Image (cartoon, rainbow, N blue to C red; front, side, top):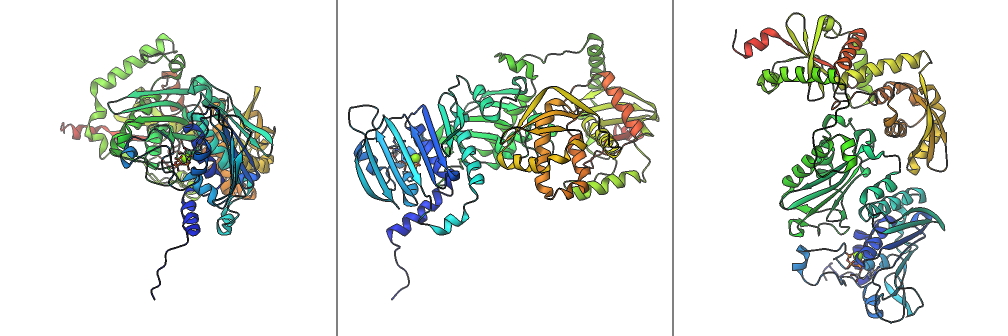
Length: 604
Ligand SMILES: Nc1ncnc2c1ncn2[C@@H]1O[C@H](COP(=O)(O)OP(=O)(O)OP(=O)(O)O)[C@@H](O)[C@H]1O
Ligand SMILES: [Mg+2]
């Protein structure tokens, strides 16, 4: 007798269910999507014990009649598509007809539903492990309420993999917020163990909802509008200034035809639009809605429908990157007005400075030096080390002090004139001995800040600035508990922070070297680093990394236009500090010798 046998139906159902339902948050995603497909505009979610004990989603959508309610938990039963042709024109979240079947196969499950149209009674269906055990008339309002209790009660292997209530609840919140982000015109409410936890009221525009979801603290002027339309694609949404960047990718929300997706390539397109403005290991904060003809995207890639395949992936990548980059190139103040025509950026500097900049930039442009291949070769770059971790960072800092090369810092800059700024990133100078010097303004400023922090910390006197109006910092539950655990370390770093509720903190004072607007993202980064360092004892050995993070949040960035005075001041500080590299090991300046330039022009 052969060894092969067809599995029992209940085993098949459980295997299939495992692909769709991984944890409580996957149940919630499916139930919310069903409510949205049913055109509900009020969706209430109740969870207990992180969703492991119970998840109930109640909506005021179209509801079902008795026959449909019974069919809804049968695998491959759906009202959303009829044939495989429909797979290429999907306008609903669901189409596989398996979410309720999967959820009911691995839980104690019930549906209470009543058609919004017609006069039929409500109905209730109760199922255990996928089998209907009870059904009958039920008095309920129009709409649907689905309850999933004791998830994986019959799949102990899966149950073991679930994390603490706290972590599972964080996943629930993420799913809930994603749904709310893409549907500002609907009301969403989340109750945790019987108490209201989060509520998103109806908002006429997506921007209001973004503020609700990410916290009111994103200043409106730091949100840039993305609005691009090409032949087959359109991209809309909002992206935040890099000061609001996050240590986790989950704040960069991407929706394709309304569906929240996780896609590394699109995330990369989104992040790389910020270029140098985004520090290493940071992700942008923003919400992007890509709309395209359904025939150009396959959503039937994964049972959880989190992934999609594009027919023209590189076109989509370029479209996202260039659209976000374009949005970021406008001054936020303009965006604030949401004018249709984007005109040239506001310039708040005084006339003298402006004419200086015009002159110097024109001077450089006329020579057009930067399009010359000379700069892609042979330039003298002072030693560059990779520094993605704390170890090499420390080594580089020590290495700097003993550079054997002719010191580019103080020496090269002993007699220099500032010519102008290139690409709002590099300061161009003419140095004695007929040398052209390019300074990376962000790298320079970071290093200067790093040294200052270090000096002040070692002398136990980090200069502190009180906030007139304390800022509140809202963190995820895990991050909040990490901060709470390490809170005693912050006064010496120049912060005065107090806990305020379960996930909130009040910042009362901060190191005056920092930029106020970057405090929340900096603190998030520090908290993230702390969770990596583990023991608080390790912090002492990780201070260089911490100072580097703090230095990264000072005033001048790549992408900032500098006045002549600011450029002169930067030069002065580089000279005084005699610095050569940023805390991450990148060079601060590059020197081009005149004879090298002449050789390139074939003058010699
Ligand atoms: N909240 C609801 N309101 C009204 N009808 C619903 C609701 N939830 C489910 N249904 C009905 O039950 C059917 C089965 O739901 P289920 O989620 O299992 O599959 P689906 O949404 O069609 O596809 P998918 O498996 O991709 O989610 C749906 O097609 C829909 O007709
Ligand atoms: Mg569904």
